[in-house]
Image 1 (cartoon, one colour):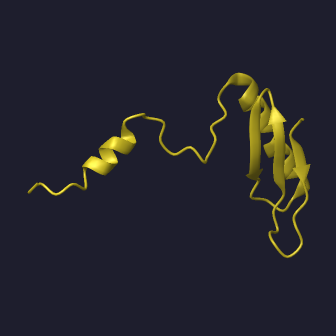
Image 2 (cartoon, one colour; image 1 turned 90 degrees about the vertical axis):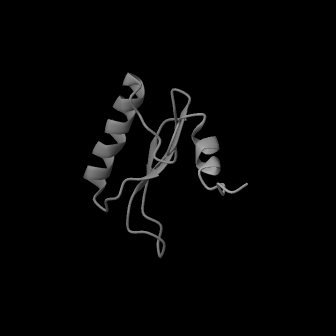
Image 3 (cartoon, helix red, strand yellow; image 1 turned 30 degrees about the horizontal axis):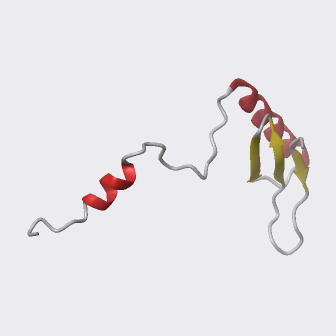
Amino acid sequence: MPLKLKPPRQGKTPYYSVRGTYLRIYVDRSTGTADRKVADRIRRRWINEIERGEYADPRIVNTEPDSAATRTNSHKPSRF
């Protein structure tokens, strides 16, 4: 399924969103703009980034495998 530009949802958001899968990369993001032409440019930019392998999913905050362990160990009391 290609990346499709979805119109703003009435009463929910004034912005266009992009949904779909391109080259096995799933996208469901807001463009952050209410202008259709600008939203379409953003959609095409994301397609180009996926093709080049540069697309970064904003939902992924940290990709280090040991970051969760570091975060949980940093709150341990030093007394025990």
